[in-house]
Amino acid sequence: MSADDAPGTDAADDLNAFITRETVENDSDGPLAGKTVAVKDNISTEGIRTTCGSAMLAEYVPPYDATVVERLREAGATLVGKANMDEFGMGGTTETSAFGPVKNPVDPERVPGGSSGGSAAAVAAGEADLALGSDTGGSVRNPAAFCGVVGIKPTYGLVSRYGLVAYANSLEQIGPLANTVEDAAALLDAIAGPDERDATTRYDAAEGGAPGASDVSDDTHPADATEYAAAADGDVDGMTVGVPTELVEGADDEVVEVFEDALADLESKGVETVEVSLPSVEHAVQAYYVIAMSEASSNLARFDGVRYGTAGGEGNWNESFARSREEGFGDEVKRRILLGTYALSAGYHDKYYKKAQDARAWVKRDFDEALGEADVLATPTMPVLPPKRGESLDDPLSLYLMDANTVPVNLANLPAISVPAGEAEGLPVGLQFVGPAFGEAAIIRAGSAVEE
Image 1: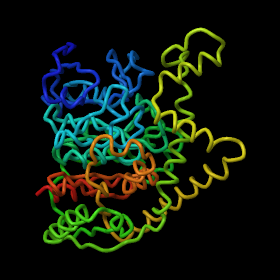
Image 2: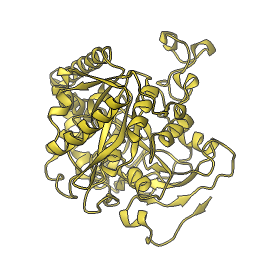
Image 3: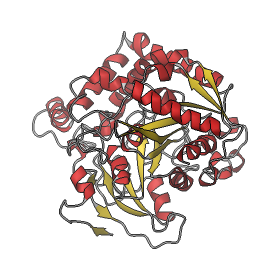
Image 4: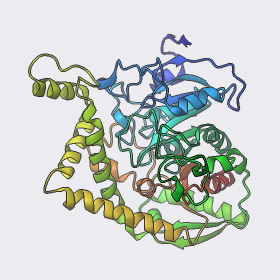
């Protein structure tokens, strides 16, 4: 292991894409040998600080690797640092990091998207071949679209979350970013698979896996039977693509124009497009934020200056606890903890949290019905072009609505990919494909056809 203490003169430092630059060489002969990988700073790395973009964890150094990092090492990848991010994954622009905002390599005046903005910027700037992000409501696909790279949000349970610092654990998945669909899929090949330390990953029930694994119809983990990189063959002849009207109508005109051109190109390759409807998505953003904030208020309770986080100093426990969180958390994190605590409080649980869970079930049912009519669904990844830095921070509601096309996928625990579909006003536009549970091969195939 060797630390990279070079002054900030390269592209990634100009963009503020990394919080910690540290190169971990790897001479093993695996499928990712020779590839450099940036790791989002909420994924634990043994001996390398993991800050989550927060002053609360500015000096925290994990004593262990996340499962995905272990698998990167086994695959021969070289780690090049910890990528900047919105604090604890809370944000859609990578402007809420305690270590400063990240600039978009395409246009440094604009945001790279979030919360995995550092990961996407590092790949787009050529500072890493590949990157890992985490996607709670679009945090891999959003920056992929804004930076013009590829991002995959896997099915919940395909990739281990062991070692991922939890924000909203029923929604988030670790996902790959890369310049091409094939490279992103190859990274998915390396990190996917069951993990005995994460009971939410699917097990091989025949081997006596986790409780509930007997409910898995084929008794095997999908990653054992699928080669994701091999699926990036661009062969979409005969594929049916559903287009949810609700997720297209809300996008800006220039984004829709690029999206429709990409669909027309797919039709020339043998794809049949059909209109489908997802009426529940009208309520998805509201349901998503109630659930995400509620889980955040619970998960972040551990950062009290005693178990984790900066010490709160002298005084009784309440005073020390309050001082630690006042000084350690940024405004967006405090806002979400307060709102989540309110939603879970006595007297309001049924009014907010229970209704949000009902809406989540409705969203999942709508996706299942739509995917009964098509192999995959297609939408613009982001309904807008990347905004300029500072434009959205004063209006949290507009920032939350920016993720309208991505958060429903996390509520339904489905896989999705964002691929560059073209440009508008010189800025990248992403196209999102959504597949059925563990249908990563279908969305990778569709995404690779857009690249051609």
